Length: 114
Image 1 (cartoon, rainbow, N blue to C red):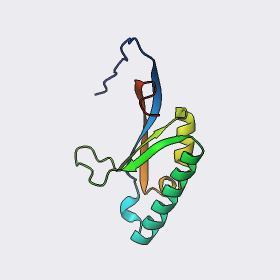
Image 2: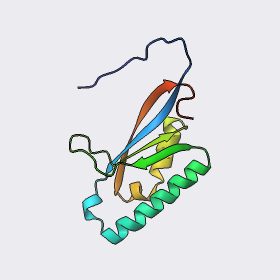
Image 3: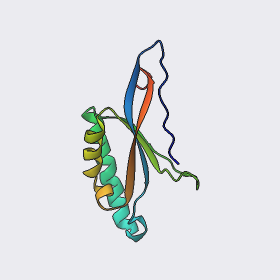
């Protein structure tokens, strides 16, 4: 079941971000621990580059994901959905199948996130 939520009219300015939810990827269980460490390091380097370039506002890990919502990390991007997808598709950990990502819109009052 899909729920569509409409944004109510408000008397202040809103802005939309791209929120990325990370989960274990389709090959996570097949990748050796050594390779997973290397891929995580490359994933973090990629995130730092995107942050330095201004595309990524912030990102972080969820160290103890719940079984009902197995999200392992969250990121907020300033880019369009297509640009965000291109960034994620170029991530070495995503390419290897260690992680998988889902992009959703996130609407909040302007200035809330930065």
